[in-house]
Amino acid sequence: MGRVTPTVLTIAGSDSGGGAGIQADLKAFARCGVHGTSAITAITAQNTVAVTAVHAVPPEIVLAQVRAVLSDIGVDAVKVGMLGTAEVTLAVAAALDELPAGTPVVVDPVMVSESGASLLAADARRALIEEILPRASVLTPNLPEARALAGRGDGPANAHAEPGRRAGEERADPDEDAEAESLARTVLALGPRAVVLTGGHRARAVDLFVARDGDGAAVEIEGARHADGAAHGSGCTHSSVLAAQLALGYSPLQAARIARELAAAAVGGGLRDIGAGPGPVDILGLERLRGD
Image (cartoon, rainbow, N blue to C red; front, side):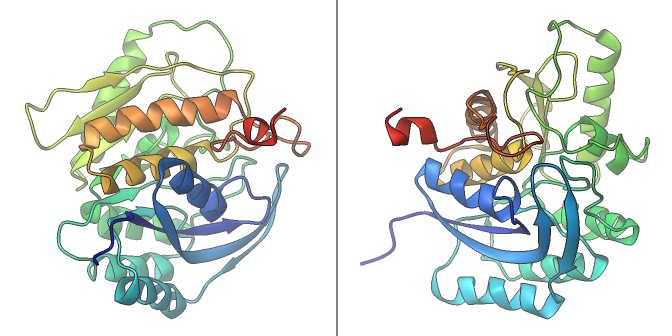
């Protein structure tokens, strides 16, 4: 009997606080009904307040983890998150070349933690752009990350803060809307087949989808903003849900719509009582599971 349970591999860093990284990815996969596997690129000593230490996993061990999964379990989609170093980035690029042809790859260009710690070395950024982006089926940057990838600035210290973090009235900003579409198309030209520019840093919490296929039109994906929610791990959750939906057979645009909805709900129901800093998102609905 062949395997019927979809499997998704996350290649990313570990968050000891359980809010982001591998831990967030596996929870998102479970929420979507797919089996999650992992290849850890870095071990972080992290909580809701700070990242106090980072240990990069040797590149050969990263590659070995991927090969172990491929040789026995297989994959229906891959999510790439924190890479950390140029050496690990190159190892991940090599690993992606060993995937079965046509395997969807979602790349979340993790550069900075929620607490402001740098998670991508300067030389690794070039490797990310040159080696990983051309191998991506869908790239999911936020606004500061897109600016950095496009060479239009490094972004603020909280460049990986995600949907729901910005309070205030939703309002249109024509200049920002134009910049967002320009950035999405500039990043698309770096090689990914589609880009979802997430809306957490925009005046309107609207994701923007552009792709090489189709008519080339930019598609807005609207959704709720939860300014009073808990957003630690929301970027990881969004990209992991998107990868899971691709594994389930949805198109990139359909997957992006579902990811926007579930990530926003995870922020809105986030665990504000966990830790002294921004609490983690709750993709599983722990309160409901407890019966509270």
